[in-house]
Image (tube, rainbow, N blue to C red; front, side, top):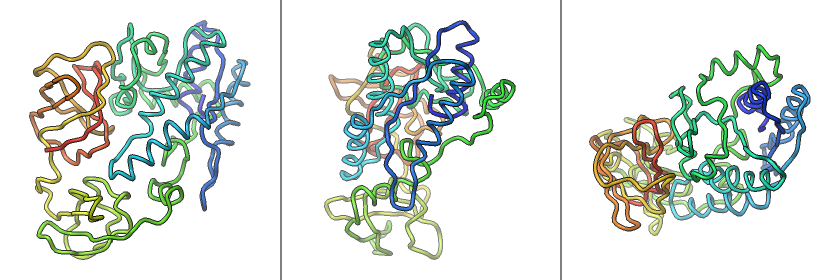
Length: 342
């Protein structure tokens, strides 16, 4: 229970369905950052208040050390390499559906449950009923064994229905806004967090599509492919990041939306993960390169640990370090980390 409306209603629904429910708050990050207070105490109080309201036991699992090592340090290392990682995916893989599951099992739990918008059927991961809130993208690196022991009570519901049902039960989190910013810190942007953790970065050139230096960046790690805001080059048409050279410490931009650097029709993936079975080479699949995008039809080609995707239509702003999640219909097959865009 995170202290939000989704996990609050998930607990209430399971209780009503006859399950013996224990609420668990995971303490993953408690440190304030300069100018930004971490909201974990408020979330903790809200989660505990809902547990009291429902009349269920409440526990706290302290994973702060493991979270720092397996999620935060991973994220920082990736950014320093010029990549665009996704800490939510790593959190699900290493913390929620591994550490949390194992500790809950050790304490006698038969199943775990979360407020994710997704569906799990016989160890298979499927998209949620509400496609606008579907979170299966973030869950592609968990195992079939973990899915068999996981319940997603909100998988068949729409967000508006969740808030309505939470209000009908007078849950105190019914109107609580969804969290924004970085998953484990709260209301803070990634740039401010990286600055706090890694310090000032070396400035460098911003170069346009004609090779002209048009500005100066304040750290190449802060920029990702397709980014438009925060360049501060001023005047005329907006510019979009199309490439970074970490060795030269240069950021390359273009004012042309059709610039080849913004579009990819082939992707190479590393560190592949398959939930059930490895996909066959060929068509019939689709891929998401970011959370809030439509899945694009693709052909899969696998040679040992090398995975290549050929897209039927080019996708915009695919970036090394991001996850490409492969679907067959509504089922999540698996995916990998993008290491090549062409």
